[in-house]
Amino acid sequence: MTSLKGRTLFITGASRGIGLEIALRAAREGANIAIAAKTAQPHPKLEGTIHTAAEAVEAAGGKALAVQTDIRDEAQIQAAVDATLARFDGIDICINNASAIALTDTLATEMKRYDLMQSVNGRGTFLVSKLCLPHLLRSPNPHILTLSPPINLDPRWFAPHLAYTMAKYAMSLATLGLAEEFRGRVAVNALWPRTTIATAAIRNIVGGEEMMQRSRKPEIMADAAYFILTKPVDFSGHFLIDEDVLSSHGVTDLDRYNYSRSIDLQPDLFVSQAP
Image (cartoon, rainbow, N blue to C red; front, side, top):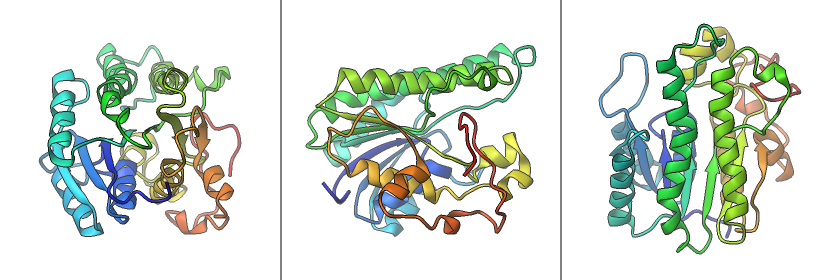
């Protein structure tokens, strides 16, 4: 299967950032996109809503369904899945993009923030995948793609922000387990960037404008996701890095993905080597 035309993607957190770029990349081929995200009204610090994302998807050539969804709430996810089935008569691809982040050490991590990260990242990924799976199993080439890192047990990734690492690795563990449980029936993979990606999280939480200048644009993740999602169902159980996926498909000039002209790119968390 070499196209996403007519395929239905259920994407969490697709109102902005990487999730939106994956939606737009698929929309340009005529895909159907269910935008399952929390932001329905404009936010003072965050660009985009489910409605502006839906407009962008339609303008790009796809069909869109905007569904306000908090993935901590099972009933809301089920309602979003049901709405997607009613609109598009199936789900072919599940993208676990929604994630919460707080890069605080243990003593500085409030349990409220710890619970948020665990609920959105680990539990949310498991629950969204679980509720999409009965419908994915009826698709001719079903995929689950989770935006989470390779599991790297180097202690340096735990010491500075243990709570976040635990929550993010929970998404990776879900990928590992689901890939084996549904091997041959659903392709389950994880995708992670080699560098930081210029998103609201980088600007507002991680590193400000300086790190934005040293990041790549979300389009690199969207293009890598496209190559993964058009592979057959037996391509499963992989923890993939964006630039490695692109280079394996002949894309070697990555400068066009740079947010600025900076050549001092910032390696992302959980990645051992710089680009």
